[in-house]
Image (cartoon, rainbow, N blue to C red; front, side, top):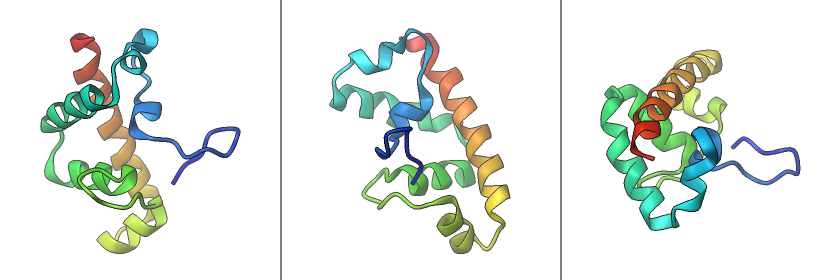
Length: 97
């Protein structure tokens, strides 16, 4: 799992960091609901990689290397898929906040 500069694990909320940090001001259950509804913009592979990377739907958060091994793809390909998926999620969430 990725970490911030102080060594704390980064959550999906941290990584999305939408405009004006409005998502941080919403309580945790509402954040989860927003993200759950935003996942519909992802294709199945993007959705699965985001779920595995950030521990959604009961998954334990995995590193890019672990996700790559599971999917039999390179770590750099996981990184590209993740980056594209996060851009889609940001675009979906920003108008809602």
